[in-house]
Image 1 (tube, rainbow, N blue to C red):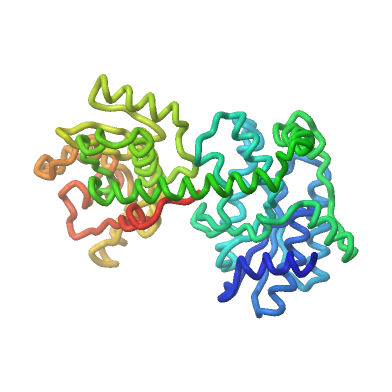
Image 2: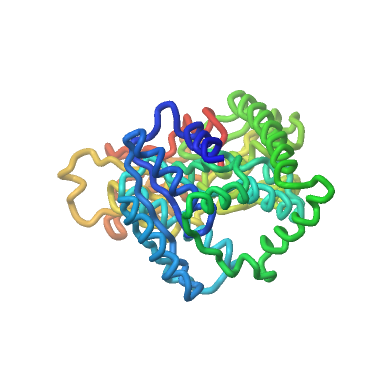
Amino acid sequence: MTADLARLIADQFGPNPPKTIGVAVSGGSDSMAMLHLLSQFAKRNGIKLFVATVNHGLRTEAADEAAMVAAVCGGLGLDHQTLDWEGWDRSGNLQDEARKARYGLLALWGRGVGADCIALGHTKDDQAESFLMRVGRRAGVDGLAAMPRRFQREGMEWVRPLLQARRAELRNYLTAQNFTWVDDPSNNDDRFDRVRTRKALAILSDLGIDADAIGDVSLNLFAAKDALNHQMLALARRIVTLRAGAVTIDESELADQHPELRRRLVVHALKWVNGAYYAPRSSAVASVFDALEQGPSATLQGCELRRKGKTLWIFRELNAVATIKAEVGEVWDDRWVFTPPSDEIAQTGHLTIQALGDQGLSQCTDWRALDIPRGALLSTPAVWNGTHLIAAPLAGWPQNWQARLNRGEDTFFAAHITH
């Protein structure tokens, strides 16, 4: 058993393993098994490991569990840090908010320790539970496809080295090695969907619908998803042009495509423009298509979709970025980086990057010659000194400033954004 689990780790990271790996460990059996397996792999391959535990502050036992992980890491000679989640306003879905906070805290920590990637302890059981939960939400191919073994989020690469392992295997490994772990009491709390799903899965297994069977189905769906994305990207290379951070699509060509390819391309464009982790629901996209049948524009996920002539433009909605500010050199709206004409000019006054807006666009007298929708230009970033416009490179008034996309245009066409 140990050899099989060790092979999963080696298959994930070999033959050229990263120099530094961050490990997210909650103290549960899955992540504790991953910690021990990765510790052994790291010693054999000269890899630096850093370990972090997120304390969501929702249970009194959480601090003790983090301390237990820290003690185990101390015995293994590994650096450990507890990351506290603070400032939740009690709005939104608890588990969704906790998950978003967890990724954000871990990504920030990972960058701080110089991790090339962060390992997560998801297993085949997690895959099966997520599958059934998404069936209940009427998910399509993407929602039911297997979790990716590698993905990008929050500017960090994440890996799931034990995605093909069963939870029971990991617990047997820990027991055989006399390694400890903790059981989160919320794992038996029927108020949570995942707990009820786990219990339902135990019943379904009598019919052959177990984690292994669901894992095979989800892999089949992952292959179907990959094929659809391949077709979508081939279509994008033919009918999409990128301008000023906006996506333009030949509407007549788009109309000739299968509805699923149309939906997939628009969703891909939305996620490239707004950087959202999750795609909008299919019903929301369908509503947008219906709205565009009746009028020239619609909004979704902080983006505006607008028809201009025979072209469909997808760009950032002004309301979504109107209050965002960044210093020169920082990333604005997680997309744009500005380069001044010289260091001396950049230090003149207190310059900030903000949306161009009506006030700024009125000073760009030649913007109409760009043949870009007014709304698209309003939401582009510009350089400001208080209320004084310094430069607007994307609206035809650069003043020797340059604006570049943090996620380059090549990322739109090279590969589908994997989440």
